[in-house]
Length: 65
Image (cartoon, rainbow, N blue to C red):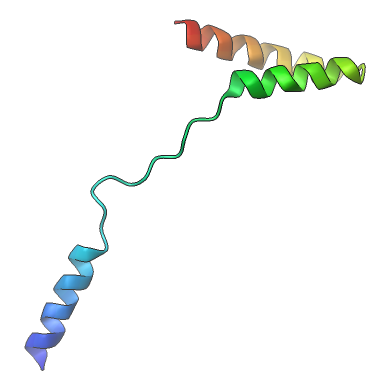
């Protein structure tokens, strides 16, 4: 009985690990920020524009490096 439990324990430990965890797809932040800037412009929301413009600019520069 102890041998069975030991073998079951080993199977559970080694079978539950993944060598490479699944990776989340990277979000397209340029597209998201561009959409937010468009919405801010449509709603005359200067605060949103001031918030999203530097983030948009950083992402565009990061992608062009």
